[in-house]
Image 1 (tube, each protein chain N blue to C red):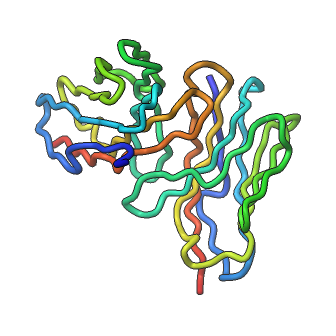
Image 2 (tube, each protein chain N blue to C red):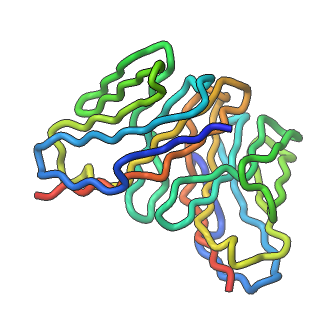
Length: 113
Length: 112
């Protein structure tokens, strides 16, 4: 099955700086890579996703890049704000009818004011 | 739309007790999922369903059962609770296999 590794487990940045979180996956058949943000005590919420036919996707201050050859993908957050503080999870899933997501172990991002 | 709702929010069980975690979605989604999230960890898939009457095991199904008699409801059953089942349980749904999964608010379960 799929295995997703996520680094770093914790990340602290100064407000206004950029943050980068990296994930690697094992199954070359995986073709959908979502990123979820989870605030303390809340449910995970999708912030951005990318499919394997695209190398990069951007939504305002958030971007995701995908390197299929190396089997890794990254989340980039620019101009970080205190409200970006949360746990971020990457996930991967191979094609198929059920889209069984395999999640990384999460990154606790803290944006220091 | 309420989206995905879960009950109860919190529950404490004694070892060996049974309970059902309820999950309902009002988005007419075919796909529904149950995950567990242990402290400081990512989510692991317990069971999933691609439509009414169809369920299948995920990564960590032992100790759990599910049913899907309607499109809206996907209950998760714990038959003999064990301390290892202490976790936060999230239900999720999506319109199809390739779409965004929407999560419910979670049920925090403690087994003592």
